[in-house]
Amino acid sequence: MHHNFIDEYSDRDSFLHQRDPRCKIIIFLVFLFLVLRLSPGSLCGFAGYGLLLSALVLLSGLPLSAILRRILTVLPFVFLTAWSMFSVSGKPAGPAFLSIILKSFYALVAVFLLVSTTAFPSLLKALEWLRCPTIMIRMLAFLYRYIYLFLDEFMKMRQAQASRTAARPKTAKALQAFSSILAHLFVRSYEKGERVYQAMCSRGYNGSVPGISRLRAQRSDYIFCAASFASFILMEALCRSL
Amino acid sequence: MPLAVEVEQLNFSYPDGTKVLEGLTFAIEEGSSVGLIGPNGAGKTTLLLHLNGILKGQGRIRIFGTEITQDSLFEIRRQVGLVFQDPDSQLFMPSVFDDVAFGPLNMGLDAQEVKRRVRGTLAAVDMQDSMERASHHLSFGEKKRVCVATVLAMEPRLLVLDEPTSNLDPGHRQQLIQILKDVPVTKLIASHDLDMIQSLTEKVILLTHGQMAAYGPTKQILMDRESLKRHGFTFLS
Image (cartoon, rainbow over all chains, first blue to last red; front, side, top):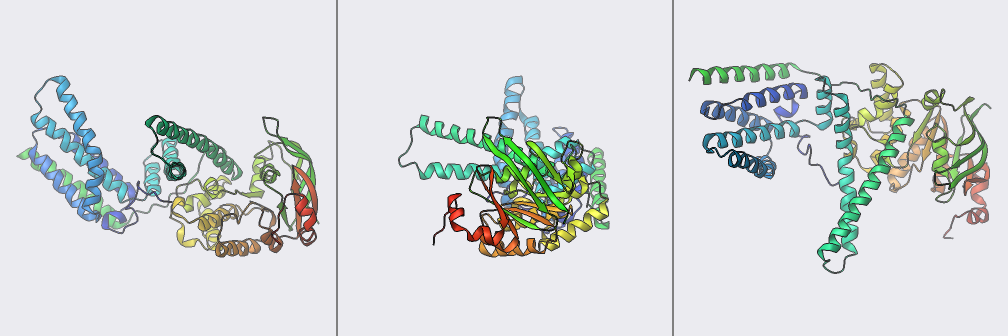
């Protein structure tokens, strides 16, 4: 398998990697909530949460280049959305525009940190524990299991097509070949779905997918949670007093 | 000797009318290992899918004396462990542990027993260190071994395997053959790998065009090269 982009860095061993996924999800959700409710002029808030996020980046041990690479692929869309909001309303951009960009940037880094420091199956277990709808978890689980497989299939078909292409094809021909690949991919994924269902049935599937939670919070997880919440409270109090 | 599988006059056609199985009748004794050979399209996989009620043709199938009906389906599936040819169809959960635990959990076993079975079967296929790995990160040989573990964890009385050694390199193939040799249950193994069939089974069913061309001792069937050639097998020497 040649692809591994969802949780590419999740097999590392940093402080953040070792933390219980439930604890991380809760902290990141609170962090996102607090950042999203910052007013555009709250310099203290942006600086403070920026510092907290930087600390989390350090604790994650992830390469900065990897974080920036991911963020930069999404940031243009954020710029475009923010710009269109202000151009439609006719209001001057200024701090509000900058605030949207910063909030999006913080949110993207936080989500990237969460996904990259947690193995996807553990993330799903944590979501299950947090009573996330089962249908959503199952869909995410199948997506995670099969997206790489279909990408691999797609790549092989593209290679087979390229190896039988002797001259640069015209755009219409290339599009035709591409659409044919997509159609084949759809049929194969449909057939694969049927076989997976047969495999599930043969192991007693009766409509529900039971699981065993093997998540175990340690003392360091509680300390990490407490320290994070203490930082949030301190930050809020400090910014209000200024 | 009690019978593990009894198939009587089994017929099956696909919705487009293509006949796949025609009047199949045979029985497999409990505790024996039987090979299922035949050219591509002979109906091997289709037959295997009938043995735990995934496909339903005309005719009667009894597993350890119990006829496959809608009411007995879950009981049958507890007893018949089916290993699919493509490990990516068999391994559908996000992690190896979850995949191996899937069957035992569906059987209603408690968490402790499920964990014991998962550890035990993964150790039996030498994959005990890969419990937390995602299936798509495993090599093909590892996937095949985990596939066997997913079924062994249900402690089936009949193990049905579809092309267990296909696409495996010689080392992993030998490893899997040894694992299967050590499993003390009734086995039905469909394969083109005649060497493996010879080393694992005592009897062989030769299937062509959905009909049983021969059923007898493995040595006798595999030695009859003329008969095998007539039924689509090609030999280099």
